[in-house]
Length: 79
Image (tube, rainbow, N blue to C red; front, side, top):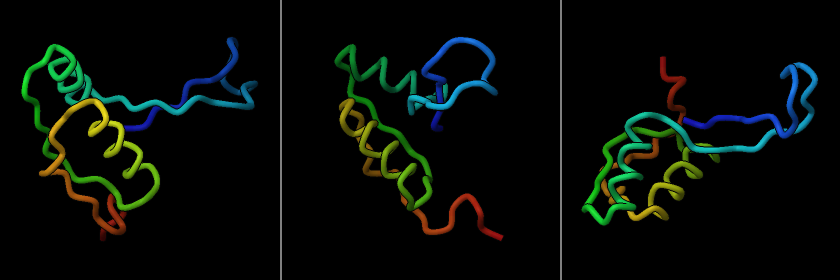
């Protein structure tokens, strides 16, 4: 999951810029385990787009085994 955090405080409707971050409970736990030195893997399906690639690379950069993560064209907009 990608979260967009406003760069300023106050109502979000007034924010003009955002910081992109990776989130999601399962991935957060996996990151925590990897940072503790545990062998960690993640199974998921991500869109084959810039957001999906960003999440994939972020998780891999945290030391998580992403060999079971699949990047799929058109996901999550499959009919």
